[in-house]
Length: 192
Image (cartoon, rainbow, N blue to C red):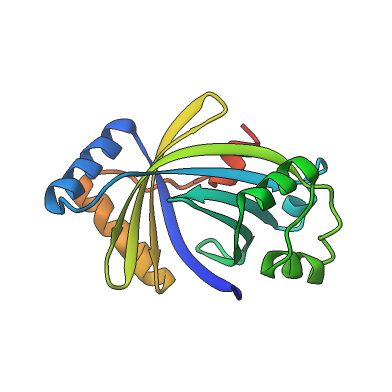
C-alpha cells in the first residue's frame, strides 16, 4: 500500500461523556456496533523510530493484522504506510525481530531504519465505535493499557478544517471541552 495521508483531530473524554455520546450514536443508528482492536507498538530498545518522528504499530482488528508506519507531519496530519501481514509475520516481528517484506519495510529502508532490532514497546486494547459519514469518520474509543484506562473521540476527515469543525460541533452538541494537550495512543501505551 502506498503512502496515505491521515487527517485527524482528537480529544479525551470522561467515562460519562463517552457513555453518553456512544449511547446517542447507537440510538440514532442501530446498525452501529462496537468492535475490539489491539494495537502493539514496535520500536527498538533505544526508541530510534520515535527519535526519528515515527512509530510502528501492529493492529489486530476484525481478523486482519495491519503493520503501519506512522510519521507525524503536523498537529492534524500523519503520513501512513500500511501492509496486511500474517500471524506468522507478526510473531516473527515481535519474537524474532524480523521485519516482514513490504511497503513498510521499503519505507523504513529508504529512511535507513530497517536494520533495527525491533521489539514490542507497548500495547493497548480498545473497544471502538466508528460512525462513518461521507467526508469524515467519528471514532469513539475506550482504551486499556498499562493498568490504566481512558476514553477518546477522534475525527478523521478529508481536510484539517473539516476535522476541526466537526470536533467543535460535537463538543458543542455533547458539552465537552476539547483537550488542549492530547497525548497520542502511542505515547500513552509506551511511556505511561
